[in-house]
Image 1 (cartoon, rainbow, N blue to C red):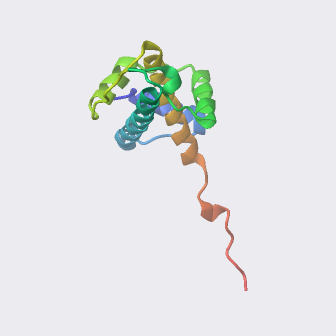
Image 2 (cartoon, rainbow, N blue to C red):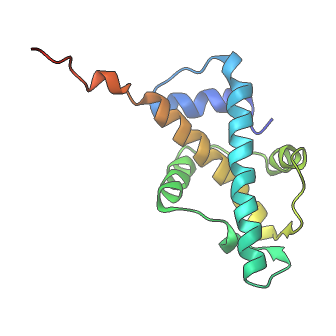
Length: 136
């Protein structure tokens, strides 16, 4: 598990004023794990393209939006366990390159930022809220 149930609940409550159902935590965890893994696949490709045999922190494709969510997550003063994240990633198909220590240290804040992003996304009202029925 990427983070404890209480951590998921706290992040959702503080970043989007939402209470998360405990039944949804497994799906959320799977989603976060897969997104982190997807970023690491891109990071591996970047490392190989730059002739490196190890994934460096600068290889991880962190967009402006993800960086903003990382900063937000850091402000929550919540820490995620790196070893748990690495265990979760180990359950997915292995990458051909290892991570540098610096790249590994970024994984908890990336997982936290993705969780914050999902929480904020759940808070956005559905499009039907913005659309008014046509009057003829």
